[in-house]
Amino acid sequence: MSKIAFVFPGQGSQYVGMGKELYENNESAKKAFDLIFGSLDFDLKEIMFNGTEEELKKTKNTQPAIVALSLVLEKLVREKGIEPDYVAGHSVGEYAAIASSGFLTLEESVELTAYRGMIMHEISEKVDGGMAAVLGMESEKIKNILKEVSGIVEAVNFNEPNQTVIAGEKLAIQEACELLKENGAKRAIILSVSGPFHSSLMEPAGEKIKEKLKSFKFKESLIPVIGNTSAKEIVNSQGLEEELYLQSFGVVRWVETIEKLKQLGVKKIYEIGPGKVLSGLIKKIDKEIEVKNIEKLEDFENLL
Image (cartoon, rainbow, N blue to C red):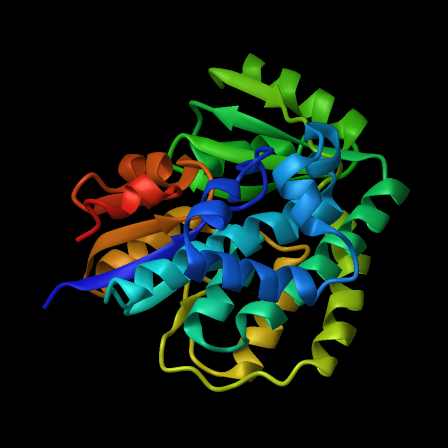
């Protein structure tokens, strides 16, 4: 029997006004949003619905905003009678996945995400780092070329067979981009992000998140999470805590995650959250998997 997976997007998919239509036109969504907004010590509602793009782009705001919308949408999908067999999230999207799986409640997951965003914002301001997307080159070749670069630069997001994101010190990123293009990469694009996410430079954030996790009581879940750093099933709280710690400064194995879901019998994936980034990546990884994007009220009309 074919299986279903829910996947949740990460940073970069946000936009001002996301979720506002849902909030104003769906009572169930409004209740869920109000539960989330009321659990935070800052005005996420104003930032999401009416704020500036600059304010929303700040990591401390972006991360809880994306997870909040993803989880409200996920609630509405479940109300339509659709249940996942597996869940996964790209980078911060993994925090939506752990609520979808049942490890944490909706508001607990957003609260933890808000802490992650704040800590990553603080660490990013202390390190002079960045990220770049490399297109048209196999990941193994990229990793070998990066060994020739002086300074810290690492391959961190394996998004699809011909797209890998690198992260590290800004000067090392610039040197790497030139070297990669000289060696055959079609493009190497510096990304507009505030820090070297998923690189070893973010390890101090991981240590703080590891400590914060002790204040949460994780439930046991019947729905496995496919972890970013391992692309393996996470079925207990101990494995999840280890994943959330390592994920703060470890790689996102998205290609392997989708391949794992395929091996487990998944034939339909719902991308739940802002944007369609993951849908595009999944189609490049495996064209046989059916992907449905859930972002707005109109997406629920032809859901099944």
